[in-house]
Image 1: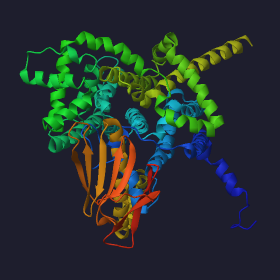
Image 2: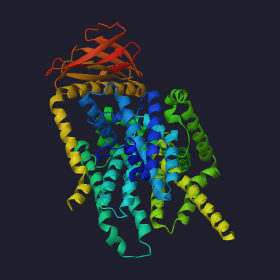
Image 3: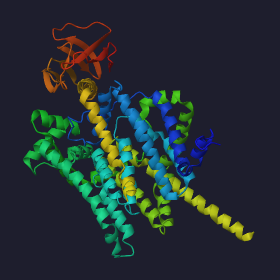
Image 4: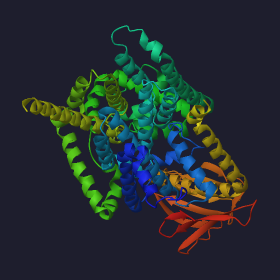
Amino acid sequence: MAKGKKRPGQFLMRIAGSTFLRRRWALLVLLAASLIMRIFLFQSVIPRVHTDSVTYLELKNLDPVRTPGYPLFLEVIQFFNDLFTITPRYLRLIVFVQMFFLGLINTYLVYAFSRLLTRSEVFSLAMGVVYNLDYFVIGFEFLLLTETLSLTFLGLTLLFYTKIFEPNRRAPYLAGLFAVCLLLTRPSFAGFFVCLLGLSWLVHIRPAGRAGFFKKYGPALAVFLLFNLAGIGCWSWRNKIKHGYFGISTILPYQLGYITQHFYRKYKTGGDAEMDRYAAILAEEKGRPFEFRRRLAEDMKMTEAQISRVFLHLNLKIIKDNFGDYLRLLPKAASSYYNYSWDWTAPQNKRIFRRNRFTAGLFRFFFGLYEGIFKNRLAFLAFILFVPAALLIATQKNKPVFHLLLLIEGTIHYSFLVCIFFSPGGINNLRYRVPVEPFILLVFYASLFLLGRFLFRAVQRKLGRRA
Amino acid sequence: MVSSLAKKAWPAPLLLVFFALIALAYGPRKETYLLNKNVRLVFMRIVKYKEYSLHRGLTYRLQFNRDDYRVTARQPRPDQAWREVAVYPYEGLSEPETPGFIITIHRGNLVSYQFEDKREILRSSVILYFHSRGKPSLRRGIMFGDSGEWRAL
């Protein structure tokens, strides 16, 4: 055959035989399946706006209770749309990007973490599929809320943070960058970097006092720490200049307001005359945080920063004086956080399920399974505490896996603790769990998989010995 | 050594090319971009005030003047006075083709479209067009239907 001519099938053969495809077949199959599923779902989605969504739509006039992460993401999408006149259906375009860009990144992240934990291609593929069939999580891709983007940034932060210990030279910069993106998307993650650093220190410091830890990882972790401090500092400074408030967001007093809404009547007068006056206004507004804010803004012409300061002091005083009432709210907050329902996506569900019967059947199957676990106390405790604890003990000798597992567990419980201590009994609690939900499921399924593999190998060994 | 450097630093030139392409596209399309942005912001602000009217129990009015558009709200209090909430300028050289157009949003619904002189619009739908003073042939609009729905065109 002439040198320049190639047989028709040669190209395809080369593709099929390429190392990349052979090594990544599971990931490619997974991404293709996720893409196809989303193409079908996207046709049935009608974007709906939640009260919180409207506060993200304008980056220019950002409410001080909000951070710029999600509004900036929306602005980038709309920048390209405005520049190239792609579509006048703005909300649908946002949902499109969330589904096909963030959705696929999240699928990849679930796959990547599954591989890191179990080193199994088949398990990682299965976990990616399970992630895509968890409507509780992917349903948020249709909503104009921060959950899907938070999941992406949380996954990327954890992934690159783990790579710091491989070690990887670019990892601390990327981990720091994504951690800042995360805390600017969801301010409840402002203390997340402390949690990560603390857990790593716990894992890598053993045996006690080993000097190598700081020498080996010190500079990289310092970069990660500096990125976080710089991110928090820069945005806080911007708020100080623009609103006269040093902090990444003024949301905390309002979140605390949802706590004191339950016992605001128990405010003890007599300490501070000015505070008593504000407490009277809060009582007139029946403890409702945003009504209180409106009153102070309109009647007393106070700025956002002043309102926030007053409200924070008032709430802290009410909580301090009635600490028992505050503690009594925590169990309700915890059960509300670990509730299981499709309430948030309810307006979409009927239409989507009617048009995608096969996928809807799978969604319902997993809903039934998870609802059964979350609503049965014993199963739930095993799911969230005992099984992960057993896995932690089992992987203790495998340091990278143990470290990753500890970071994931730390993330899950960090999110839980922040949410229950700062917004107890709030209806939004369920939504706050969404960014960590795939990690909760991942740890559970990975535990079952590793246990199954261990038992299978033990039986194999025993049979081999007999033979 | 060069090839290893190229392997590690490949995202940098790619990013540079990307931003250069955006800058090249932005130059000739600036008017279109600003007009699109203007219509998009009007659309998003209507969405915002629709939600606010539903949850705050207020009635909002958006009046599109030649140089800006003003948002006023009516309090659910005895005086019932219209209070100015916000004033937004148009983006770039954009302006409405029919200044004085007013829309009223009550409890999450668009309830009326009218001109300043109180002439009610009785047609089943009305389009509020914006054009760019820099490029008069360019125009984009928002269509308001009698069902209270609206969409950008």
